[in-house]
Image (cartoon, rainbow, N blue to C red):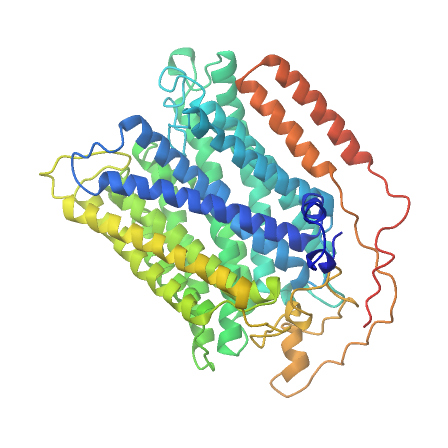
Length: 616
């Protein structure tokens, strides 16, 4: 594992690159996830701007219908699978071992493999742009739009193969973090003493393990239909197009909470820190997160009220959809009560956290509307649904992810982001977000269907579409401010120190950036918010005993490995072979088997890290 010496002047560039390609350090993998997913986030944003330019005025001919289909398919798929979800994974990779007092994850090489599979899947998905055959049937892939008849060529084949690679990456990561959280907590850290962020991650990873298999089954059916001529979704052959919808939404509604639970956990760490008081009702926050995860598997068919499931099914899914709003409301109440009476410091992380609460609440209220089948029938496939989706996923997840970025940036890189630019970033994002997406509610009520690439000038949609386009460009400007902040911080940022926010949890008890081994001595936990208790004591002023300094001694660290990237590259070669030549499938398959064999049997006779001897 590379230490911070690899960042020192004089180290050869090729050595630096090699250490990143072979790293198994959870912190570096978190940085890789964050950088890669942010690039995909910018790409998805560019796709959305092109769509908004097309819709800014009626009868526009800037983008044709085929290109527009490709844009909205790739925008949705990229945002969900390549941007928001892996951005959460970046925070999970970097922060979770530090929050639970561990030196690394349970399976470091599996963690690296998960990242490289994610990158390979993202590249495969976007290869279609280079060949002029990007996926074009929507990120939901409804049958029969995905059949060869309606989507000839390799458009959807890129989508099918890439999503399966991304699913493997997610499942491997979920297994890793479930084991890490359950087995590698610091001594004394009871389950209910774990930080709420860690709890939300644990629930989210169980959702991944349970939700991705139905999607994988649907993708295999679709792959067989397109590659081998089967007819799983063809009514004429005894298939059923609704089978795809059930398999997809059994995955996709839990996916909503896969996307939102880690951001909820981030907010639950940011607000107590900047309110200088414990999280109100922390056990209830944990139980509410578990309830959300449990109920998320019982609401998938509220996406299908329009298909004619019948009154019994409609009533059942309607009631459960209303019920899932209760634990969400518990969380919002507890965040507000945490702020109530606190010594609030208004800094950039808190601004984004407050923006999350407001925007996510608005998105949740429009979501409750869709729990009513008659209302849903009117709003299905209209821009009202587009507005609701973005208020939940952008107003929710993305606001919280930026809160986490400003909050943990000093810990990751050892420098503070600029506060003034951070506030400008927040206000541009908040204003641009509402200008972009609130008019979509009105467009939906005025009858504008989603996924249309143009419209007539006499429908009353002109002003609202123009406003939405202006808002989208304001969001784009806010991202430029954030990038300027990153560049400025890299050059002249203020050194952060170990604890710039007067933090509450264990990651703030060590240096910024953390050493390769995280903790010189694994901490012992005596209560919730262990580091806060050490500094300030509980409400009676009692403090836990000071940790005993570690004697200088070697710390065994997992060695770097090139097998994860070789496995991912070999699998990518095989997947591309499905779209090109059978011989390449065979070659890629053999390379994959050989690299998996090498990955499984990699052996280091000498423990790596004997030279790692922390001084204290």
